[in-house]
Length: 318
Length: 116
Image (cartoon, rainbow over all chains, first blue to last red; front, side, top):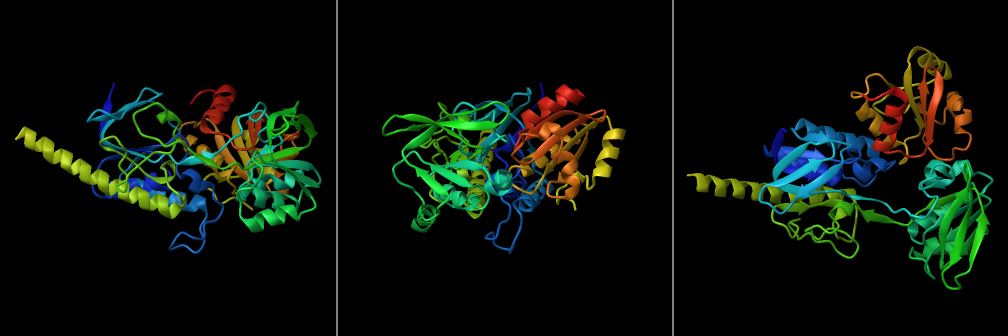
């Protein structure tokens, strides 16, 4: 089997990973970028971006394509739609094996795996996705004109989308597991003042039911433990984001209690030669500009690490 | 009216009819430029070079011409964008609603049209 060696393997082709790739390949490092989806990460899903300096308005699709092409033109090899089987972080020479049998080695690894929308993970969720269950009010709201729906969540997204969906639905039931909302006061007030919204606090959905499409949900009151079935046509789920770090569970890379990667100010993880950047790391704010900054810092420090390693190795040889 | 993607587009019902009558294997993603649709266009874009025996196209969901997709019996219960339809020899072989990942798409492509 052919094993190709790179200076850096970047896992994740969102803004953090692509930026790291641009900086490293421009510094003449050999770079492989791997992504399980398509290049762009969460950024590609953003309809319009109005706070990325230099562009008054740009779609996430266009900005993603620009970054991908820039990285590619500087020499990065980008492989999308891959599935990682194993990673060796701890050896001095790192290695990544893919499920298609390919194996790559590198001096450094940058973890830029980003985040994803959280799912409820209850029975029926996968079955009725697109047949009553949605994660995007802008995309699918008008399918529910004149129908009864529910929104799940208690943060700003859930509150704002519940209000926005009343443009279409005759009734919106807002279901949240805690006894209070986590959003801004003004967003909460809009919910309480909207006659089309019914609020169910301290409640959770236990199952989605139906045959060819969603017909009802089973909801449990977490305080009284009583369950009831609500007949409806749709459910929109807005329960936040989580880091894409499942493949790091139980591995040597240190994660926090939210399963986010712990990196220092140089984006170095607890493992020598392994850096992290973007939405997968533990931090307060998640923005494209910050992911780009993280990617830059990770790349510059990875470059320094690579140079030091090469100097050390050449010293050994001479 | 066409979508601003890098895919080839189908703009009219007549174009789609002609396409499915002339090409054996056709995948059409009918959507908007939203977060559920864009990843599907991205996957299709990447698969084009691999699945050369399949014609990949997108179509603007909001266009009146897209009624040809929206009104398919196979899409009757769909309530999530995009509507993605796979045509084999002019007939609907499979249809999905909402976001799909690469594995889900290649599973259908391999099953209906054969592996790349």
